[in-house]
Image 1 (tube, rainbow, N blue to C red):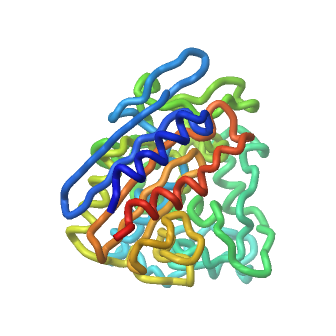
Image 2: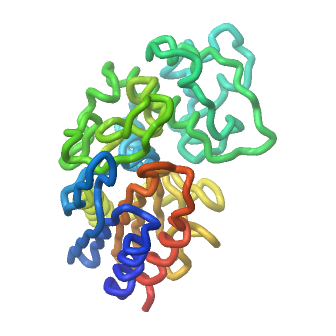
Length: 323
């Protein structure tokens, strides 16, 4: 393993201006290393990044919070992963009892094995969170010919969590170093959003999550050490349902090692990981007891720029896992 080689890649990406900042953290056999460089904010005024800078984790919310919480409910036998979502959300598509949506299960949503569309601009249909939840539950969803990675799966799982726990996701405690309502001054900035008319800092970047007032597919904020803590707990426990394959590319809430994936090809086949649109990622290799996180704010000040984040993630993984 070469942390120095991996860090040099992150440093170069920042120095060249492709991304504003980077925080790289690793855990290997319980030994931890974290480094950081660049700016958490470029505009309206520059703010340097720090080890404890809070990042909008975007879709890392899916495995780190939502999937973990759903799997905990399953382990406690409060839900059956192979039962339809209607076992917890009986009003899902309640006016069409024979529709395909009412047969979708928790496990299918966790593994992105449903025919829901990848994404839908839910935020364009209104501004009231309760009404938008009703829209999600009663909409006749376009059915794709084959499953794709879909935010809709985890929006629905988030609604199920709210029903199970009797509280809004934003009111749930995600654990130390993680938050749904962070201090904006502690956060890295994301996009200068044309819809909201401001640079997003401490407010969720994802438009649908923002409009829903919290959701299962995005909205979690956190620092690098909090993600490494999550990884260390999973490594100490050993492979659980998160590592059980559901397809060639997916497990329960996570992506699994496969050709061309974000973690690179030098990791072991037991590696799982996930990325976030804002430029975040976490990977865990159970065989070598290694984990790493790369946090960037690559959408600041705009998503419409070529940052090379996909290549950077793979290259960092290759460097860290090289024998």
